[in-house]
Length: 82
Picture 1 (cartoon, rainbow, N blue to C red):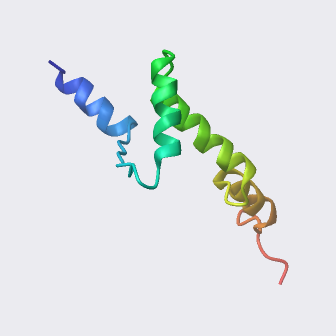
Picture 2 (picture 1 turned 60 degrees about the horizontal axis):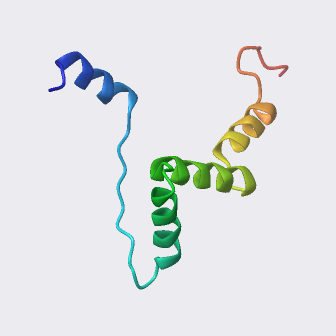
């Protein structure tokens, strides 16, 4: 049984996502995840690793985009030179 403090901590610090995979379309993913599980690996860890790899190698990397935006954004702390 989880304590109220643990429930509150989970609510503030975690997000939950779930998905269904279609055997007709996603059998490659299902096979890979089944293999990970059979070999004693973490399915959650494999999914996280794949997502981080994708983010690191795509143009849609949120962390890269944020860093680039902060470099090009005007500094709002300083008064304008107008």
